[in-house]
Length: 164
Image 1 (cartoon, one colour):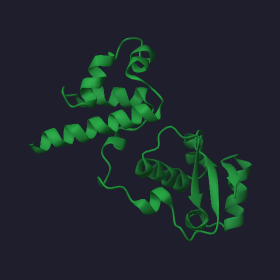
Image 2 (cartoon, helix red, strand yellow):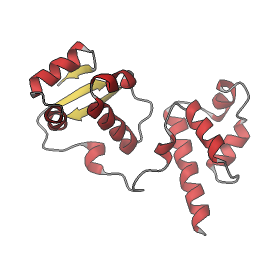
Image 3 (cartoon, rainbow, N blue to C red):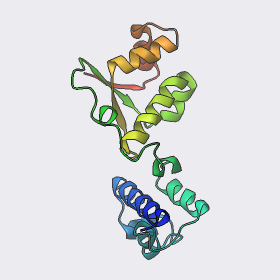
Image 4 (cartoon, rainbow, N blue to C red):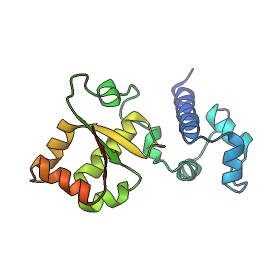
């Protein structure tokens, strides 16, 4: 199989994975889009039976509320360390990611880190994300804050969902 076909198959699998993470069937995509996206067409993109333009790919990803970059990870093998975390971690924190865009105004570094984690994990449907305390300690340091001050900042802006 030539490279282009393999890449099309990989992208199609990622499209299908993201659609399913959103809890959508092919028929749901057609209904949600008001008929703009036909179920048979989306299915053919997922199977790589049909080529998709960048513009249409971008539009479909917008419908899924996921960035197009999710289809093109830096590495095809995702890092288990980021996905499952550190087995020796002592504490985890859970962040509200539904307000990720507001987060950027208060902590650009945290917003970028959360976006990176979502991309690596391939999780576009979550409302919260769990991160290691040590990762937040590093971000606090980058922002010139103590860990406790940084956590308080997250609490004040209601980005901290749960402390374990």
